[in-house]
Length: 195
Image 1 (tube, rainbow, N blue to C red):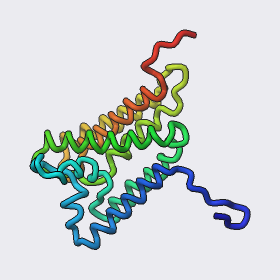
Image 2: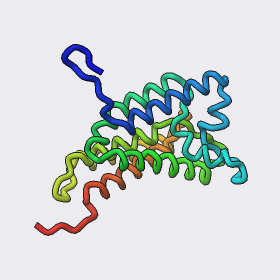
Image 3: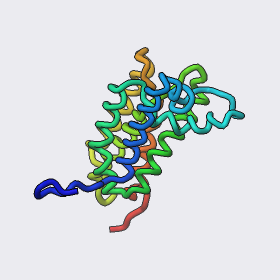
Image 4: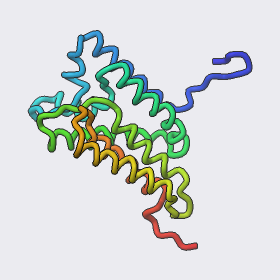
C-alpha cells in the first residue's frame, strides 16, 4: 500500500500475527463478558482430561485482562519483536513465543495450583533477554547483556519473593530464561570457536 512516496509493508509476519491474535482474543473476551479468558485465554490447574487445559497452556499468552494490560505488552512486542524477527528469522521467533507460552503455562500449572496466569508478559521478557544478545560477536558476552539479565531476572525474583502485586513474576522469569537460552543458541555462544 502506497501513501505518497512511502510504501507500507508487512515487515514482521510473526509479530504482526501474534499482535492480531492478542487483539482478537481481547475482543472475544469483551464480547463474552470475560468468559473467553476463563475458558481459553488463561492458564490454571484443571483436569488433564479436559482438552481445553492443553489449549490454555498456550492460549494464556494471547489473553489479557484489560486494555492497559494488552497495550503495555503489545507495545513492547511491537518495538522489540520486528528487530528480532529480522535478525533471527520468523521461524525462530515463532518458536520462542510458543516455547515461552508452553513452559510458563506448564510451570504455573505444576507449581501454582491456585493461581491463574494471563498475558504476553513472559513473551516480552523473552524478547528483552534475546534482544540483549544482539551485540554478541565472536562468542564475547557484552557487559550490557549481564546487566540486563541481572536487573530483569534478578528484579523478577526479588519482586516475586517480596511483593504481592498480582503479577506473575514466575512467568517473567520463564520468559527471560527462554529468551536467554535462545540467545545463546542462536548466537552460537555454546559453540567452541577457533580463531
